[in-house]
Each structure stands twice: as C-alpha cells, then as structure tokens.
Length: 78
Image (tube, rainbow, N blue to C red; front, side):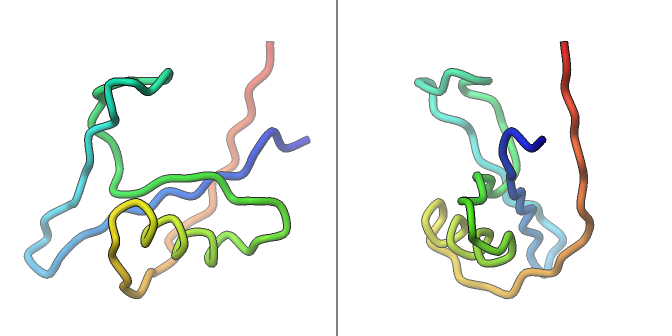
C-alpha cells in the first residue's frame, strides 16, 4: 500500500550547474537542509509527470522540458 507518491526534480543548466534549494527553517522534517531543485507530492488521480510540471512552476517559477530518468520505490515498515 502506498502512503504517498512523490516527485523529485533535479535541474541542471547548460553549464552543468545543479540548482538546489534550502528548506525553510519552519519545516518539520530537515529544516534548513539543502535539497533537490523541486520536490512534492503527487495528488491522487494526477499523472506524476503532470504533477512535476505543476510543482516546478509553483516552487521556483520555471517552465522547461523535463526528462524522465527513473522510478524508485521506497518501502518503510516498523
């Protein structure tokens, strides 16, 4: 059973520089931690690629073509 689906975007420019961002100090998980360019949850019923474009524009205001690299499954249990 999925707890939630998530997308992660790593933006690399033509000079091979990676855009990262610092999480806000008020975040509950890993505050002030340097992290990927964009990340976010995929709402139910939304295609993950569409969600990635939405998150990218919402978080950093950039519209650009994305290239899918891989899918990763993470499972946690206690």
